[in-house]
Image (cartoon, rainbow, N blue to C red; front, side, top):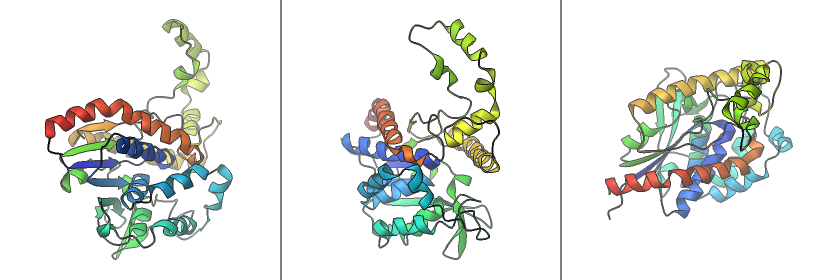
Length: 306
């Protein structure tokens, strides 16, 4: 059976992006090797390190992150185009990937970014890997824009949160997309917290109604999505982060409706806050399990396209 050219589109999702590591590990275990990897934001970070042969180092670093260690990377830099300078993160990436150039990697790779001046979608397919990655995750207001080839670039999730179209343009015949936000919006998972194995549906509804603030409060839901905990009133930072994710989610639904992947892998990550980078082990496990669920669909698509 002739192998189709396989493209892997790794989507944005901030801390939930550690699930991409589990996705890549399980695909690798199943004997599915992508020929093309296109990543947006943290999808570019994980996908780029994988294409460079540095995923082991990335997984080890992610597994060692605690909340305390995360703060060491938060170098505040007011007036520099973002709340954080991002220099410490760049230095960490350069330890493993500082000499890597995209065009020299064994796997074809593209990092999706957004040009700040025009809003154009820019694909970085050559040059040093680290600036391409940092530009792709340069979340506006948080990290400063990155200058690449005389263009100021920011987070690619502003224009293409799950870059299926990029994989197609680069020649992929079979595209596997990884959507990190498939179970987030419209679900606060209170029912999952309350349900028992033998609980009748009417009793479940009654339990939810007994907790109206917890179940229905937009503020509570927002704090759960961002920080993985419950609070009474959202901060300016949480409002900004949640607003960006809402825009990304709506944009992603529209783009994937117009250019769907052959198979979509959707890890169940709504219980992990956007900034909970210290929960890498859980996210990686969810990524592996999501591929497990998707394997029959991948096999069907492979057989049709081969």
